[in-house]
Amino acid sequence: MADATDTGPVVTPDQTDTTSEDLLARILTSLEEDKAEDIVQVDLRGKSSIGDYMVICSGRSSRQVAAISEKLVERLKAEFGRGAKVEGKDAGDWVLIDTGDVIVHVFRPEVREFYQLEKMWLPTGTA
Image 1 (spheres, one colour):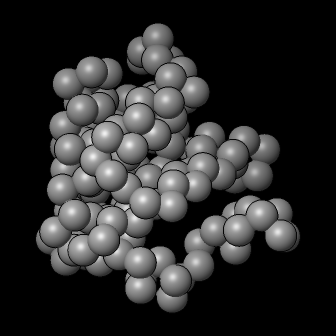
Image 2: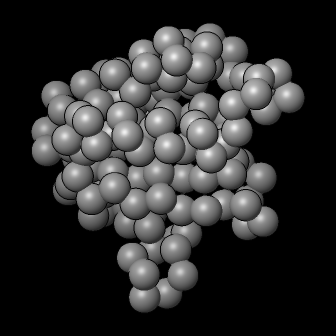
């Protein structure tokens, strides 16, 4: 995923009143609005310093994966003034969106099955 795109500075929590929970709620709503499938959220607080939450979901095709990701980034910028680092959008197999507090992975189902990120982060028996 070498095609990183930067949509502006990633805003840190002390630069805005938006909490990671507010951001997570909007991300989940955006994904649902765009018909993302199998949405899973992972609480990273106390487990990793990469963010507070991780969200993993699927799109049915490369085109839908790219569209879900693009709309999410647009909404976060418009509603929260938050830029995000985006990788993988051009290929459409796996898009990573890093908002600083919440990391979002949007996969095609076959790619998601291959990498199985949920198994790395969720407690045994929940993925």
